[in-house]
Image (tube, rainbow, N blue to C red; front, side, top):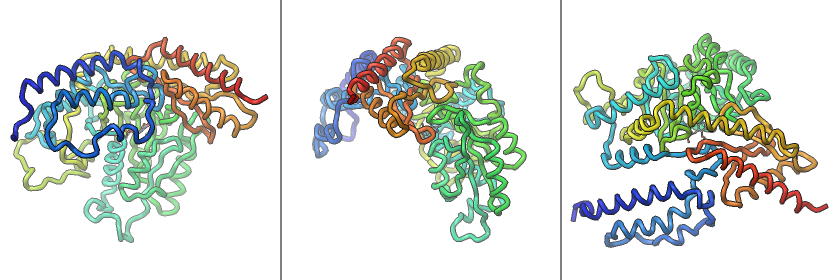
Length: 481
Ligand SMILES: Cc1ncc(COP(=O)(O)O)c(C=O)c1O
């Protein structure tokens, strides 16, 4: 009774699942990107109570094929061009499956020597690929939100006179207000980190950005000066390389110099765009990040690694260790000179994420990865030129990587234009072959198209543009008058 499913049934299910995966990846383009499903419809197909008796894996796979696969949003679809379009990849899927089979908990070196050492090795490969100095050490987390929170915790801990690790923050009159700076374009994960770490949302200064959506350096300097004059203590700047809306890049080199002069921690959020730094010709966008105290970069966004996989690169990994290391008696081990990954964050148990990343890097090779990233950037640049040459549309932000932000010039006022762009987005997404998303830039509704999917080709982008154009024509024709 306590056994796993019988070996023949397991093998058959694994073979079938392998075929289902390969078929899915081959045919995913046949689905509409957004499933035609309403809230509650999936739930209605599911049994309300758990089965009392076990069911065959085959029957469960049948239901997977019937209920789950068609009712999911297809992030693997070549027409998925919204948000940050991300894809896994064949090698990543194989790595994910094998890590599920091993099911190790890589909390200590002893509980998983190969997972620990592979993680360290693969993070160092990434460091080399990104052109960062040797002293950076990588640590894999689930998401950039967690990586940024850990980095800001290390920044907070580096204020050693405050002894926050031991004494906490609450009820202390001796603690100055601690302030974090980031741009008005930065990701909300920075705010969430401040909420979680007891810094408070009101102590996140959202510095205005310039017309290219880059943090204004002058405003940053002013904000830091003003806080210091008011007795507050600036502890960290979060600069972004590749903001969520437009992929703009803050002036990291100037910010890094300022942070060094002022003794402020610099964290660089390169969650999406970090992948571009593997291409030497794109590395100029990241100038200065080698001076950061910490950098987050998500291989699960644009390095073809299945979600989740976020790498936190630390200039001094001991800063993380001293913020978080706490070893209860039952976890004490006597291996010397090893890394125990549990020392580098909040969580104890951890998945073996390095395996899929190792497989992705090996299977594509650095040159193969560079070629794919370059091609995505090229397609985005070409699309931006096409859009620019259409008098009915405008590109509204520079395109340093593979995201194009644009607007339909419909309507006679900004309010009308916003509602027309919203209508256009809905019309495009209702068609099926393409998914775009939207954002707000300077308070105006903007369409956001991201290329990051391994299967997306020139043809898909041309088809997407035709679809956008014809949706706009249809909406114009339907206008009264
Ligand atoms: C710039 C940036 N940073 C952080 C995040 C958060 O990423 P995650 O989902 O890995 O927490 C995002 C998400 O898109 C992002 O665009």
